Length: 330
Image (tube, rainbow, N blue to C red; front, side):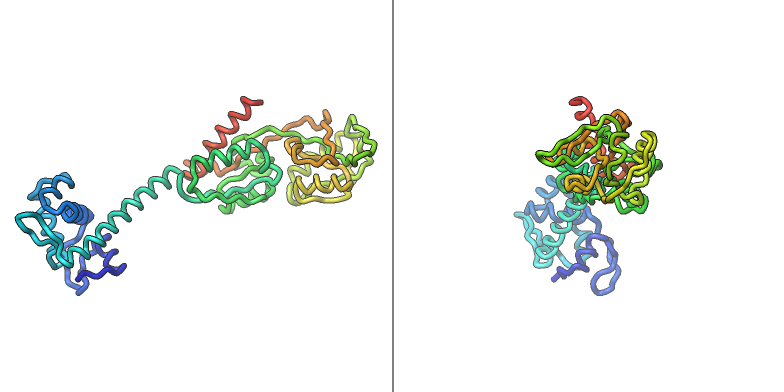
């Protein structure tokens, strides 16, 4: 009786021309398996030939080749049709499993090539994840590619750029691409600007500043310059153009942290305007003309890898669709 071990299944699948006793034998090819399964399931060579789309004499020859290669009869031929020998019944189980596995492998390969299987590793600015345009992108991608494993790591822009260069990320949602990673490609999700975040305790008197100079003597909650040099340089330049260097009282690691420190009364901070929906009522946002310069939030990827991987290409489709809808709505 034929062995049902993994070794024998691989032997059939790869067509290695050596039987279990070490004797040379004719190579078994996939067509032999398909023809044998067609005959076994149909119960006759004639019906099997019709099912396989091959003339009966050629099919009979293929079955004989298979039996010669294995070294034992698989079918008992009768005038009324065929029945399986014990070896044939065992081989049919293996052959149908192998053909099904081959079909599954083919389908997985096609789905992987279409970006519907695999893994997508993204970085994202922590304050960007709640944004509607980002949420729309993620939902559209999940709807289109539900079987892709999606992982998202909250990271600052410079950290994302470094991770992309090291191959640890497939893409990122970040700002300051032209400063942090000009060699990477980007698709704009939205245009943003900085606003001044100030403590506004309930019941307290709040004086709205008109210019940056009005807050020159206030303590500031600042971004860690070592973790986001572009962010630091941009805002420091804005303050210096207004005639002062900010007095940094606290340092925060990301935008949500800055907002929390402002809410606690630690000082003022510059935060993206897009973060306004996440600000508590104890934080007042003020738009100043001196902070009118805009910057882009982009989906960033390695454009040198052309074409991009299938899953990145599918995510790019979702990004472009969502960004287009956001521009039309704006």
